[in-house]
Structure formats: C-alpha cells, structure tokens
Amino acid sequence: MTRPDHDAMTGDLFAGTSGALPRYETLCPGAMLLRGFARPAEAALQAAIDHVARAAPFRHMITPGGYRMSVAMTNCGTYGWVTDRHGYRYDTIDPERGKPWPPMPKVFERLAHDAAEAAGFPGFTPDACLINRYDPGARLSLHQDKDERDYDQPIVSVSLGLPATFLFGGVRRKDRPAQLPLTHGDVVVWGGPSRLRYHGVKRLETGHHPLLGRCRINLTLRRAV
Ligand code: MD3
Ligand code: FE
Image (cartoon, rainbow, N blue to C red; front, side, top):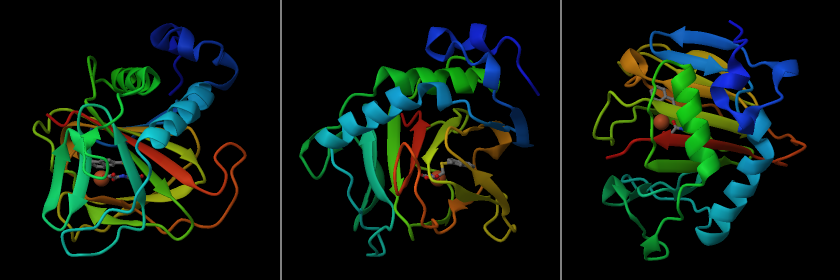
C-alpha cells in the first residue's frame, strides 16, 4: 500500500521522501510493517542514540535465571526496562548509575507517534524507549512483552543497521513463529490483537552497515505506565 499523503502526514522531519515512499504491510491483525519509515530520520536517530549511550552506556543485563543477555541494552525516557536477579521491571532510575535515564529524544518520540498514527493508533506518546544493540552472535529468545500496564497501547519497533530475522509467533509459546527479515529503517507497530504475541530475534550474522557499522540497533518504544 502506498501513501501519497505520507509527507503531509509526517511533516517536515520526513519531507522530501516522495522518491522512496515506504511500503505498508499488515503482518497479522494489529501489526503493521512500515518498510523504510525511519530512513529519512536516520542521521538524527543515530546522533540521538550516541547521545543517550554517552550518558547511559550499553550494558549486558542479567536475567532472573542468572544469564548474561547477549543483547546490550540501554534506555531513555521516564521509564527504562531493566532485568536483574530479582526480575524484570520498569524503573525511573538506571541501576548502573543511580540516576534517571536520559530524556527521550524528540526524534524518537516523533517517529513513534507518527508510525503509530500511520498504523491506526493516533495519539501514541511513549514514556519508555529500550535501545537494544545486537553485535554479531547476539539473539533474543521468544518472549512476550507483558511488563507494561496497558496492553491497549501499541509498541513501536525501529530497526537500524545490520539486517536481522525477526520471529513472531502466536499468543501461545508453542505456536510456530513466522520469520520476517527486518532491515535498516524498517518500523513495525504492534497493537491490538498482536500485542501479546510471542516474538524474538535470530542470532545476528556478521556484516557491515555503512551507517551503524558491525551491529544492529533496535528501538522499542512503549507506554510503560
Ligand atoms: C511483537 N525487541 O526488546 S522489538 C524487546 O528487535 C524486543 O530488539 C526486539 O522484543 C528487537 O522486547 C523486537 C519488536 C516487538 C516488540 C513487541 C512486540 C515485537 C512484538 C509485542 C508483540 C508482538
Ligand atoms: Fe519484546
């Protein structure tokens, strides 16, 4: 599906994209893939990620079961997602630094808002952004996102850098997952009946991306509280 009104809808940040309009695709009820939606903002996104990571560095958190996550993580916004031996939670304080997370960059907030609107969820205002960094070999096993208060709020996921294979299953762990290749600039909005689906990311292959280098970065924008 093409959107001739895309520029008008997203405003000046994303203006001038008419030569390469993103394609829109429904993956399953409530989930919409917006191919290339983040590309016009790639430089601003990268600068904002660097800014956040200088204040709150990427770290490998420990799962409640005692495993070190292969994905390196940091957060920005009012709430950050954290895991340690005690469990998963959203916290206003970065436990590594004992200080609040860096504020949500305007470019993140705007991208999430505009992507959600394009997918049929107007008025989305994220209060949490988890930034996941996948180095070659990193993976994320199948899980549900259940730590948020209101499942009626969508989740906006932004892929940058190296390509990855995303897995999305059903609402039961045993449901065989579908595989979805996600590349630089792709945005997925997960809402409605897709919100509690199991999902994960396959082991990242080695490679080099012209902007991000040897990694994949995923922004997961949520309304936590
Ligand atoms: C599908 N991150 O941090 S976000 C996570 O690429 C996480 O780093 C992945 O899953 C990543 O929790 C993918 C995409 C995503 C997020 C929430 C979902 C997909 C979802 C909720 C329901 C179904
Ligand atoms: Fe998830």
